[in-house]
Amino acid sequence: MNKLALLFLSIGIMLHISANGQTYLGISSNIGNQLSFSPSSDGLKRPVAVSGNLFLMKQEKLNSNWLIQYGVEMGILGYNLKIITQDTIHIHDITNFWDYSTFYGGLDLLVGKEFLFRDKPLMVGIGGGLTYYYFTYPTQYTISAVSDNFLLDDLFFADVDIASQQISGYVRITSQLKLNEVLSLGLSYSYHFSPALSGSYEFFHTAEPSYGDIHVYQRELKLSFLVRVSKK
Image (cartoon, rainbow, N blue to C red):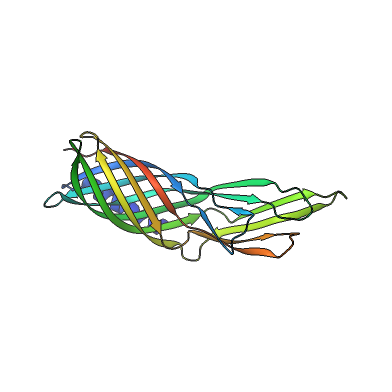
């Protein structure tokens, strides 16, 4: 983790002191990260969650309105594990487990082209990069209920931990609208190929056995605000 932080710091310094192009500091609000279950179950729902990240990005102009962007980012990955209990001895309840214990840092590279949209520069591009995940602690989720004879029945259990592969590659489609010489608005979608987190689940006291695997993939729609921090 220390080596990765040093790498991000070094790249950030290089981006900031580069003589060419423009440097942007940005913040984004992200929605997505639906969980994947194998096998699926009527008791497992897949709502989206809201996350966020900060990024430092450099933009270099090429010929014919083409450009290249590269930078670093860091943020927090959130997800929502929504459970509807499936046991045969209690009333089915709905429980939401929100988790924001996973942090990440990433390297990003994108190629795009600028067009005019209502007299404002609009960039459309495609790129990708690598993301490194840091999980603060393994997480366990338990749902229990008191039975008629005052005993505690376990109805559901799940555990989630960092995936064996802590680095995941991704692709990203991006659009950015320059509002003025300083501010830009961005909309993008990123798709990671490998899970950030993995785990397992099990429902108890069900008519049929119900257990399987959980995966959390970082796949998000991002709304970004960018501020140019370099000189013209």
